[in-house]
Amino acid sequence: MTLLGFDRYHAEIVRQTDLLRTCLKEADPTAPVPSCPDWDLGQLVRHLGGAHGWAETAVRTRAAEPVPDDPVNDVPRRTGEDPAALGARLADGAVRLADALRDAGPDTAVWTPGPGGTAMFWARRMTHETLIHRADAALAVGAEFAVSEEVALDALDEWLTYSTLAEAYEGTPALLGPGRTVQLHATDTGSDWLVDLTGDAPVLRHTAQPAAVEIRGTLTDLLLLVYRRPAPTVKVTGDTALLELWLTRSGFWLR
Image 1: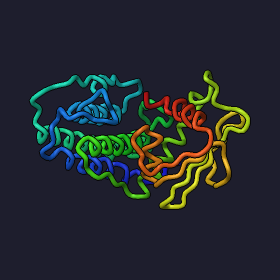
Image 2: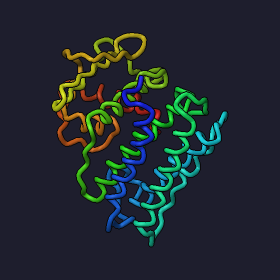
Image 3: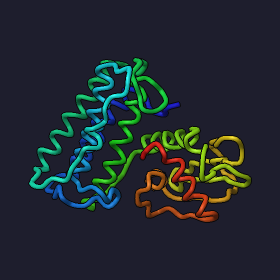
Image 4: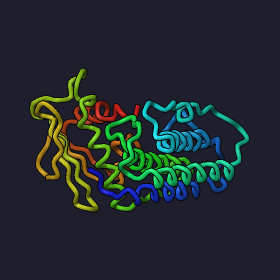
């Protein structure tokens, strides 16, 4: 299930990119990115541009087999980069991706690195890839990060959906077990999620009830928490070891 429509996704890729570009104005591309400690700001931007290009290639060519992801990961440190040029290249790539998605339509079959196998996967994934890296850029330059409720809800829903895949709970260390439940509560929207880890596979419910570990914070900060970004409003009570294990195992798809 997705909470936003296909047209909203490809428009949001461009919008989130434009918002990220505001962080580049007069910024130092060699500034460290605290939430991505191996990267500076220039590397972060080139990584995101590579991700947009990776997705655009897959969608435009209607790829039936994996597309090399070298542009995503090959982001060496550089000096003397022009932040305006970095931003312009990023914007151009975002527009090309949005155009490729629009041309394909949501149901076109295409290789995807996760469940789905259609252009809709890429539209949703690149929306939230761009969103989270906008948060990284804002942190790097000390800018405010804000996101609309519907986009934040969709981003959190995507992460939680992937947290129920077999790769998250099969193998070791064991994630499932008696009494293992995780409760998330958004203090600003009243939204609740219960992650039940007591059965044969994780189960998500939109309900509030006592849990082994309870996490409270704004919707945006809950999203940042699951992505391992600073989340200043979040308060955790209960089994913090379970929370750490759940975040680690459930975040397998981001590594």
